[in-house]
Image (cartoon, rainbow, N blue to C red; front, side):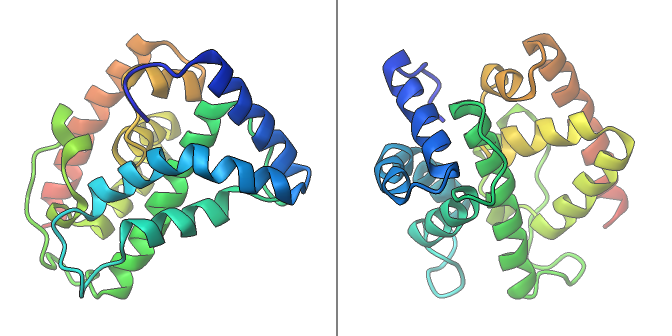
Amino acid sequence: MSDQPDHPTRQAEVTQLLDRAQRGEPRATEELFPIVYDELRSIAAGFLRGESNAQTMQPTALVHEAYLRLVGPDQAPWENRAHFFGAAATAIRRILIDHARHRGRVRRGGNAKRVPLDDGLAAVAPEEIDLVGLDAALNKLAAVDAQKSRVVELRFFGGLTVEQTALVLGISTSTVARDWQFARVWLSRELSESR
């Protein structure tokens, strides 16, 4: 999601299209896709940047797979655009983890590099992080504090800002900032202990 707020008309249009898509109107999903595609592709490209084409999926494939998981009559109702992109973060996380496992990164250490979990985490491409290890650590964090785990998922896998994360979770920006800070420390410790 971009850092600048969308025009309110565009936000309302996305929310209306999401509502229509969930009622099973195929035309709505056709209209929605071009509107959200650029943002989803930007998120996907950030994760896939730097990997060799022979070893990874393309951003377009990731966007299409995530979109198919997000839209349709079997999905929970989307409250708004932020809620949709929050769900996109979850879908992208699951797809990337499945892909990493498929590529054999389950081995301890794999070809991952150590990176600090700091505010720049959202800008770090996943090929520099052991995604399977991060996923396991996030699952452990969710058992301790689901909200903090969700904050990391939204910020890292969804590329959301503090403000956007607060909107998706219905909490204050200061709570998001505190949760993000706690989660970074907790995950750094967890990932260093797993090596």
